[in-house]
Length: 490
Image 1 (cartoon, one colour):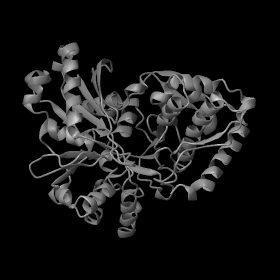
Image 2 (spheres, rainbow, N blue to C red):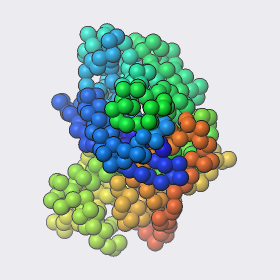
Image 3 (cartoon, rainbow, N blue to C red):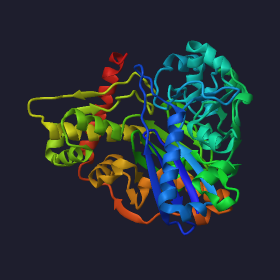
Image 4 (cartoon, rainbow, N blue to C red):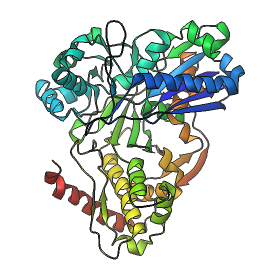
């Protein structure tokens, strides 16, 4: 039995996985985000621990026997967050999260300081990454910066609390801008540019390796392991963990994720950076594997915003209204720029903003709903177009995952806009927690072939050739609108 813990932005999820691939139990605990100032996004690490205690108590009550049989634990979670602890291992301030946009000026300073940044880290400096956050702390909170003994990513702080060991793994560390992604090691040059050294960093392991052991007092309190040592795997950042959970670990396999943010992810067997278009090149959670990834900051969250703002009962009602807009009416719908929280790929513009353009008296809630869903889909298509796979590594398979994947209509729209078949797999909503449990299984001696299997296919969405011209013309106008408004976003 294996336990996967996925520390997301809005919830912490725990999943029990048997070695016959059956999911025995799942528990969730909600999390809240603090936004004390514009562009800020923070969480208290104590909230993460309280959520962990809650899910473990729930699992013990419902699945005590399975929990006692757990042999290893895997961790996944939100990437890029800066958790600062002092020499006494105390948290110094709330963690600055992945969707925090305060460090734009520090990104510019880091880019000037390290001209080879993209070559080493495989990514441009963006406010979401960890290194610019530390530059911001050094500039605006120097006392806290000077007291910082160690910087941990969110899931790695949980590991520290679980085990007493400061350890990270390659996929999450690749999102800090401190890792030499090709070499899979900390970069002294990048650390020095932010006033840090290797002493501030956790030890590195691969995601499928053993990183530490669960403290006996936690094991006893939660009823984990029946007294035997419980290993903790390296784990993975959320998207790499989701890929492992879906069995998408071979070169050319990938997914489109319709979560709070939108992600296009493709596994590779080599380091293939394309920082010029804000495409991310990260280590995968398995040795000698990497992945390319584009990220838009508002995907399903833009649909949630529109549902609240325009009076829909919920997101499902908005999607139903959008689906009711017939093909002949779509050309006359407004255009929507989905940049409600700035944007990463391909624009790398924390100042980018949302816009509804082309409204007339003829437009009602259904047309606005369609425009919003289409705008998110176009933003994902822009990210998809940044991926660069070499000729000997063709795109083999693209799955559709995340909460938005529950809408088959939206999935079909994406397939039509991408002009790529999309596969809906059973159980895709388990995502990072399942991937974390699978990484625990690998750390316990499982092989990739037996552990990282593909789940059953639920549905195949084949792109339609009927409305290619419609999507192409509206996508071109969508791109032109961003260019026209870019100077107004400051």
